Amino acid sequence: MAIDWDAVVLGPTIAIFGEGQGMRPIYTAEGAPPVEIDGVFDEAYREVDLIDTGVGANTVMPVLGVRLVQFARPPRQGELITIPRVGKDYVIKDVRPDGHGWAKLMLGVKKAP
Image (cartoon, rainbow, N blue to C red):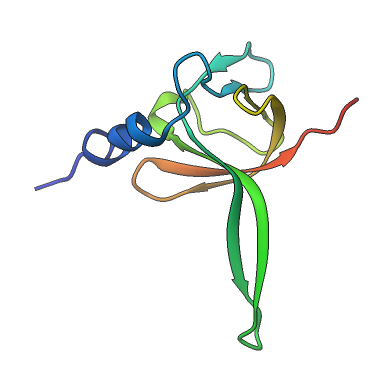
């Protein structure tokens, strides 16, 4: 029996941990108007990278977890995400799909022009 990851896991995750109504993230793809999306935002996501010597190096960055089903095509590096709750604009640095319909958008703070 196949698992409908979007219905059973991803949708409920957004419902519980996602940004609230009126505070949803805004995604701006190249050449397209901004659209509201659902996502789980973590301003200080901690990632541990193991170096060859077995020593860990921590990296802290903002991350937005998203359901890929809500995009006409997967998000890309360089596109923009606005998080209204924190009042910041971010640039997508990396897109990391998990193989089950979810992706982590690794973000960097957008520099002022």
